[in-house]
Length: 272
Picture 1 (spheres, rainbow, N blue to C red):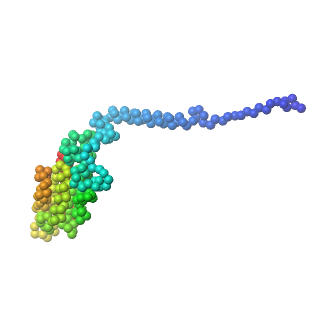
Picture 2 (cartoon, rainbow, N blue to C red; picture 1 turned 90 degrees about the vertical axis):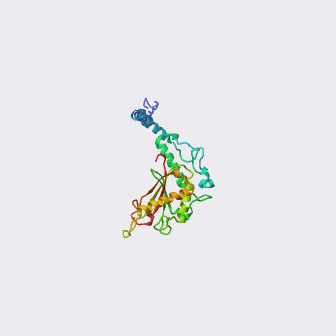
Picture 3 (cartoon, one colour; picture 1 turned 180 degrees about the horizontal axis):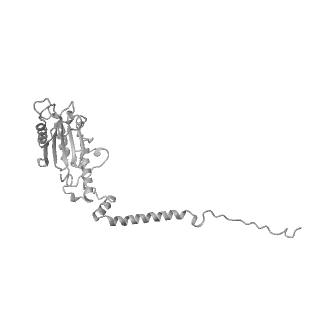
């Protein structure tokens, strides 16, 4: 028997460490967060140094809107909560009616003022097509109306259709349809205090006509609408201008289309 037969058996276990020490991944996440924070910090410092006080105020207003919620505001379930569109409370107001007269009443600078006025004009625009207990635009006359908010204000376009003209052909004598349209517009415009511009347009006449009456016809029609507005108790002082454009601004490629016979009522922005 060999001398070392009863010697203890020694088993050496080798512990493998995978990715130990600085080879781990957790520190990378923390380092990435740190680098991101530093980038944000230096970007902030650069912006503070590269912008003016007015620009910084504009940036701050963007992230913290200062457009106020007025004490009289539309709301409720459905279209205007079931109220008539002629009820004063259905239109967002400033407390004394209509759009603010003085832009300095609003906070947030010029951009906020424009955004607020756009919102008010859009409120008026919606009222022309409101469907509530006392609908103002029946399906028959709503098809004669196109509205859009422009740089000048809210443009309400009333136009002829082949089977339904606004004026007797070739004259400035209004039809019953136009009378109904004007009455509807007056009732909506009465909810605000903006001034109004009236512009007349006509389709191009055939070259064979003896006398082209586009200029006087468009002007006379615009003037007739002014008379109709005032007959509906619209304050004359709110009428800013009355203009005839003849056939100089067609709505499409067909310059002789009846669609070009139209009246544009512009609810002007303050300052125009």
